[in-house]
Image (cartoon, rainbow, N blue to C red; front, side, top):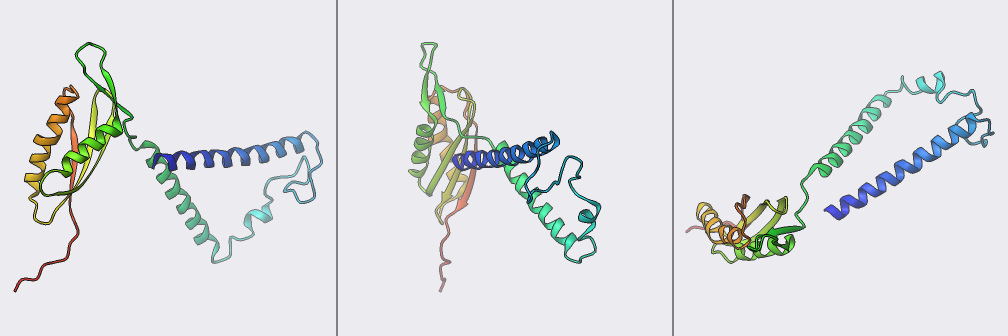
Length: 195
């Protein structure tokens, strides 16, 4: 997701920069006295961006305002999506593990996530697990998605995950705490017939 977001950011910035450069440069050139090409929006130095006739041309058409409102709504939704993607917490690249010598060691965040997911999937009743570490490298936080088997008890799966996976991971990394947000979901399966 972050690679796609970086690509979207770069494309949007490049397009915005190109549009601003072309429009701003052309307005500056025409304002300084350069003659515009025949197809350009402005005829000369004293021309306005939109004339009164151009501004009021479509107002009386029945389709104009719904199209304007729909276009603005789409732009607002895209802007909100982009903003929420910017504010979403990124994954932790590395975790600082206490080694006892005062310096510590760095462990890749992805490696710790894989270990947590593997240990969680080894528990009875857990079909699949997905983990993501966020926060700071000295105080990580875990986001965990557990997909439970049809016969699993959610409270038991959560208790075992906390005591058999999360606590040993916290202790082995020498962390004071490893808070986790765990989301439990049931695996999709067909309903069984009862006769």
